[in-house]
Image (cartoon, rainbow, N blue to C red; front, side):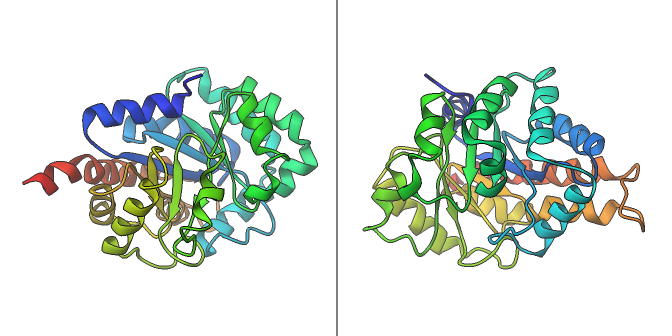
Length: 279
């Protein structure tokens, strides 16, 4: 079965460009504003959307995304409400791929089978579960794939050629390459090193490779897009949102635009990358 993610990367390949994958924390700063942002992302230039599911102990996340998760949790965001958001988003958009990204604890508490059935019904296309290794594929990955959901795995600079085949074995949709060693949003990626890493991963798989962690500006996005199939941006969008909030941490009239304006700039960088590289 061809997923929305597969279809989107096929479209991007035909267009000869990389895709922009945007991460936003579901429920940040509140449910209604978060849903409004989600609905505005495709028109701003997002090709794929990752929705973060907040968790109280997010070990891979840097300060910006940790703070976003806390804002969301304080405003009542849950895994169930994230699914509600996807369902609401799908009422007006049946083509943009949606990926839920987070940690296994909320899924375990919700129930793996229950989550997979609900995700399918809501219109989720893929899952990224940061702390669930390939050795636990029977737990969630294989059941997800059996329901037609992509299970997207992360590869890091420390994932060597011996480990990579294990990581890729049941990965589908795309491979998420973590461009830095460490937590999100704290360092800028080394473009030359990233290009070499993407080429190495592609020797092991035909899946698209999207690169994230540390990409903040249109210029960085363009540089990464020249050698990757996708560019993932999260912390920069979360920080743009945070900067638009009032003194009490509530949304303002500038909040949605703060995110979508940055997405539009990033999308322009990504879309112009291959053309610039070819000149």
